[in-house]
Image (cartoon, rainbow, N blue to C red):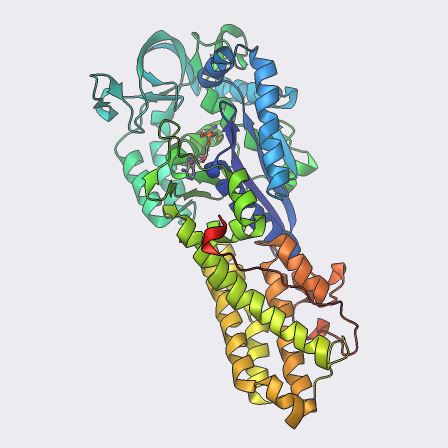
Length: 516
Ligand code: ME8
């Protein structure tokens, strides 16, 4: 039987200790593009994001703000919801780990682990990093400049000694290696997969999964002195939102296992090692993929609060425009690699790819149609080889880009679409419709029709990346709302000659370097 067309994609849930930054916008953007693409492709999509609200780090931030943790998390969580609206993200759900549904789900999973003898009571004596909310072994640490011990992330660690429940992670080494072996696409990119495999092969220790010195969290069922370790609590959000513990629910049956957990490279180990181990230990199927994306630097420098160069996504959008930023972030670097944000690179993409290549193509073609074809879709005559070639390239795009979307290779998707945009521009220059206007008006109409039909394909396929700009482009081609899905690609839904067109307007203005 064919796989049902359903797709479940998740972002990490974000700590509510600070304002949203570029990392948050980037991860959620990638998921938004996937969710939009799959919806347009006829899939039943569930796209989840939310906030991670428990643990010592959030407890501390609330205290520093002089607020009660609940009031604090209510306030900061709202900033993440607002960012989603601002960035035009289409998440279907927004989960908060302080919600009752999540507490029930987390405690239920814990009880399953107890029943299956996967958790035992012991005591922890070791290092803990509050910033990473992570336990570290001595061998992972380095010495900081002032003699303080530092975690691999550079975060400070403190010595902790307390009673703790442990998860029998050491027993899951072999099943995890089998999972990676049987599912080569479980961890992407490949280089990250290799890192995880060597980490697991290096041997796994049982994992501390409760805290007694922290109060802000979900109580361990039957032992209120302990609260569930924030990473266990947080990871469970992905099944909570799918209806867990009701594994017979429509949602759970439809959407679990998730197709993709999108994460930043720093939190891959939690998602690709601990999470599938917890799930397998509880008898729940692991997700299908974890993709670890890279990090952004700002004008060549690592971003950090202390350097004051944190990239604020809202400012970026206010400076360059929403769809421009959405395009840039997914075009500038091969997805999975680290990338550098620079004003120069941004201006270059806006003027080169957007204004010159795509904007100019649409503007040239639409204004020629407006002037020479009575503001209506022109009639095409017999097609020549050059016309057929451009149409075939545009009509073949979907089948070329869909497999790349399934590998999260956004830059390749865009590059593939841009190859057709460049081919269309070369076709305009070759066919010179402004010359045909006098010499052979019927041929001019065929050329303009061919171009309009190519632009229709390009705009439909670019909707997931630049939803507003492409909606405007499709409006200008008078493509009806219900004809913008991928099922409308191809010759059966081609533009109809004689359809009146609105007055063309530029979609991507050029930006002058001084403007910003
Ligand atoms: O880790 N460039 O939350 P968080 C790109 N609550 N991505 C970046 C970045 C940068 N400069 N800086 C950070 C957590 N990120 C946990 C997740 S999931 C069950 C729990 C990314 O608010 C980073 O890799 O710290 C991570 O994916 C996210 O932004 C920040 O998450």
